Length: 635
Image 1 (tube, one colour):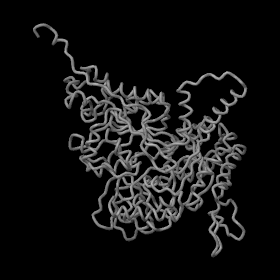
Image 2 (cartoon, one colour):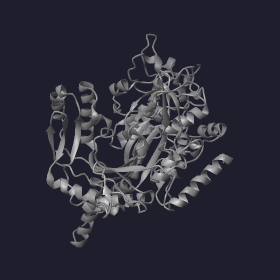
Image 3 (tube, one colour):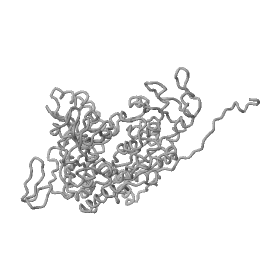
Image 4 (cartoon, one colour):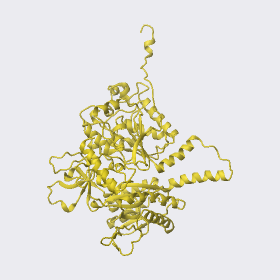
């Protein structure tokens, strides 16, 4: 470790000792937060990052005030319906205030919490959830309400009382005060209490006193009300849904700032300019732009904590909620499912009823539910065997007719190729899986099913071979219809290893969907496809992967990428610096088709670590080409 990095780690370590031994730094750094913010939050279970990004952070030693909020968020079918409403309402009626945040029911408005009490909030969330899970409604009844400037679902009183009890319990057991102590003045607008001079600091948590509601549209144009109502009536809130309580935090310094997202890489030309990487978030104060030139703004980078000038046309508007830190979740239906299974087994034993022996897969399913609730994991998988790996660079010429049509000259060529708008020639630098590659993907998916692992989301490189591999794995897991594939360009292969002077022409989401791939059309990549540069440097490649590794929520995330992804997508999680480029190249050459790396959260130590993958390696030998004509006598 360099001397500067050693000093920085020592500096942070001392700060941690002051704030309390239970605070854990590394898991938050991967979220892209400055070190001072990570120290203030100390939330477990986040991606791991690198301290070197914050070497020049001017506010490293500043106490950063954080606000926390508790939301109840839908998942599954209801969430998909709401996201469709979000998309259509924005398209037909332009953006309104509801589009600035994800679908949610507010349980507690934003409140302050001292750093050493954050761990108590996490524990309180689980205790409160366990306490009311038996009374949590299987279906949350929601009734549509519409006015001149508001459209949303209101929750009926009886279920709302149960959920309010949950929020109140979290607040009380989290080490915060629900009611202000005597002698404190309460700010009626914010709900925060200010201690008298010289006295201790208190914070007041106010569970939402209004009728619990899920906002669909807010502050829209009056003439759009009818259209919004028609779109809202297509939503069926009575469908079964997993409701998840989620604890978020935000940096109070930037609450009223504009939030920009970097689209392209930018290297500073002057010392007062910011370095930009695609996906970076920049906070901009609209009142401090007088000194900037046209086309430029001055802002603060969330990733580095540094402030400087940046070209505005390298960015796009983002929502403040995009920068919130997601800390802990409690999924009620999963907890109820697991509890009911255990209770049912205990009841059968007590009543002396015959209990059918469980198959290994039944046991694995229960263990998978436990893992889904208590553990966070990332499984990185290399794609299956690709056609050009077997038939060489001229593979496309071997399977093309003179008029540009595809035919199958060997059984290891795929039966067909998907349609591409530019024709078959685009497959040359974006080859598909071979028939053996498809088989490899399916056998790996079958093994994952037998292992009992519970995949909760899937991210893939935009390369066709990776999307195909993900599809076949999901088919074997029986999840091809319930989990959408999220295409993330940031985990594409190191472009220096790609042939040609330009990045390959990859299939669009529309083309993939038309070809039968269940890809998500709503997912917004961390690294836009347009930002991929040909022949990028090694540093550019590893930085791209570091910002693109998805944030690990509850469950197991599957990442299907290239051999290089097994290293570049796991080291940021593990908090390790990039390998030397030469060592990296040697390592990647040894990774087989469907090679896997499995990262798992170690809650006790507050960090991520590599563990045994859930399935064994797939090994197979080569099969030489055979021509029966060579057996004819005299040939």
